Structures are given as structure tokens and as C-alpha cells.
Image 1 (cartoon, rainbow over the protein chains, first blue to last red):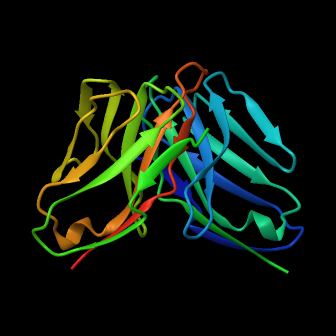
Image 2 (image 1 turned 90 degrees about the vertical axis):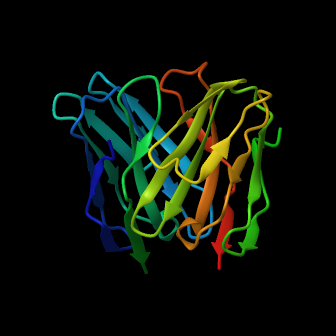
Length: 109
Length: 114
């Protein structure tokens, strides 16, 4: 039930944009996005419920295509603080969350 | 409001030893779970509980036991530690009162089995 994330890693210069994708083989109830800094716990970014909604928080936004069972996380005008590993978590119902293997994002000056 | 609290933060065990990772939350969440995180594997669900007295297996339950005698506590027991259980363990709880069921993680427990 583990979703598939791509790319596995990306390096950006400050100010550049990035897209991280998450796809599932099962129909999804919700998609959750987390960011983890090295040596720390994952931190919640946003959640998207089925219905094809899109959410945003400052320069980080996400979309959820229920029909395609896919979600994408968009990071615009990246900052050094965006560095970390991004995980998507997917739920097929109001139950357990299964995580992808992560996308390591490195932002350099 | 401390959130999700895990102890210990670091532990070294010898193969065959047993130990318990403690997890407590003060948010009155019914749902709690344990994940392990290994390089390149992401977070994998070990066990979960939907309320006091109710537990169930996740993706990788072998070698671990859990119990849930109270809403606040959800300890994870390693019965006979093996080097393959070297990992970072995260306890998490979920607020089912909100739509989408956001999960909140503890700070993690780094376990090394030698």
C-alpha cells in the first residue's frame, strides 16, 4: 500500500521551483505531506481530501487528483529552509497512513 | 501541552535483549501508532491502536508487541532484539475530530542493536 514518490532526490538553487509527485495504486481518501529535517521528526505540511482540491501555504502548495490517484507538492521560489526530505502519506479510508520512501530536497545558495 | 512524548531518545541493545519504548500523548487522541524509519524505506507502520484495549498489526509487526491500557500510553516492546531492528522509531497519534485525520509524530527513538 506504499505510495510511490518521485523524484528520489532533487537539488535546487535558491529561488528555483520544484515539484514532487506521489502516486498510489489504490483509490485514495486523503493525501498528507510532511517534511523531515535530518535527525528530527516529520512535520505536518498539509492534507488534501478526495475531491480534487488544491491547497497552499505561502510558497508551498499541493494538488490531489483523485481519479489518477496522484498528488503533487509544489515548492516555488525555494528557500534554504525548504531543504529536507519530503514524504507523502496516503490513506485509502479513515484508517492508517502509509508513507512513500521520501524525496530528498537540497536547496543551495 | 507536550504533544507526543517518546522515551528513550537513544538506546543500544545487545542481540537477544528485550526492551520497551515508551510513548505518551496528552491530546486525548484515540488513535496511536508506531512507525519505524530505515534509510531508503520511508516510514513503515508497525502496530496501531484505535483506542484503549484495541490494538492491531501494521505492515511490519514481527518482533514487536504493543498494548494500550490507557488512552494516553502506547508502549512498544521488542521481545528479543535483533540487528535488523536497528532503526529510528516514531510514535504518532491522530486527531480523529478533524477531517482527514492528521498524524502528529513524537521526536523519535534511535535504537541500535549490536
